[in-house]
Image 1: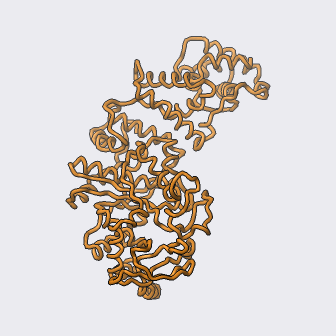
Image 2: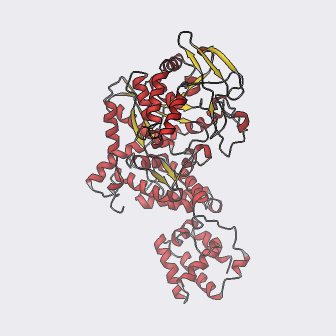
Image 3: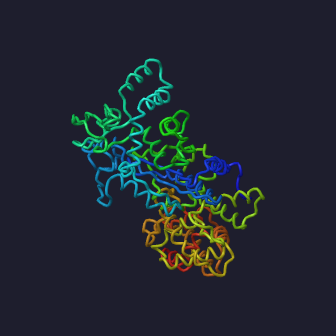
Length: 555
């Protein structure tokens, strides 16, 4: 990527393709919806869905349209399992809605609210601002209650749709069993007023508390709870009910008037839950349903993330390591059909790539006209907020990785001075702009977190307060000759990183020492290891005064 970036990696035409499809709807307000269940901490992969929705909204507004994004919190879903990190008793809460389960941390109204709020708190950072809709509250509205009645009155049609879509790949025996089971099936389950459960059993052996009869004339429903055996006939309006999930989705589209919804590959496969929902929209609710925007998953180190199993990498964790604009960039540059595999250990390289991409936008790198055009389209969409008029210089991340770990040795003031010197030199500045200064501590903090959590042994650098005795005991007379000569180098004119690196070689040769040994000696004196960060830059970071004092302590 020396002269720009490989264009084949970029496939952003999907943005205009999707927006054109959505514009065909020609509605007063375009509503782009997203949604997530609250079965456990929500992973970074879901933010791809939020970013796609946000970009569609931005482009519609650019086109002079009125557009909003929605985030539906599916906190009315029943508990099937808890992630390993949760201390709540599964036996006590299984089958109850997440909105009814207490928050074990005591800071939110429910377990479902706690999970959702963890994500919602990161919305401003990622530059997304959807209206938050709680599924548990939505079911209390007259509109959702009416949608539930529409589904009950159209139970026969819904049964036909499910047989057509769900049973399409069954063999003859499976299909016959499924058709038989659908004869008495209703699309609504009740939350038992006696035990509070909407279903019995945990994963693999779930029995929903389905209503067994509905009278449209009297609006009466019947059910027998499979969990506690409670049986009743009651008016629908007096019960808490929930539609089956393949029906719940199109009902929410209808009630919220959704124009468009991005959906992960698990839901958007041909004949899957999204297509089932579109059929329900047409044949039950009498409209086309939203535009489907299918996208591939985000993986972590080649693995799919699974909220309920606790395999997550949360948006909060991402923000502790890297910027939200880097994440937006990574999910926007490929086509929607491409999976994105995030490798946290490669974050420094990703940051370098985005920093270079940003400099292209501001005309600070030479690239082809096509590459510049692409950058002009994509870069503004990567930013959570408006594009600054002038480029804000960024501290090189790999420099920040080492520097951030020197705070205890050098102190915050010296560290910030060193960082400003680097920015001045790299960008030919007389003065570092305030915005750039403000970003230094953020980048240092992320770099240090990355080094501690995902860096290799080489990335993690610890400087002992003094040189351990066992290391001093290994220093030979030849080593001392080299160190004495090197003291002279450090007392001379200030040198830049490369010049200082060269001086290590020169000094070693002047006393007849092998180059490799000279480096080992210096690393052992500085950090009690045989290798470490690139030496010239590291010596300059520590500063001549500190290094001289250190070397003299062993001579």
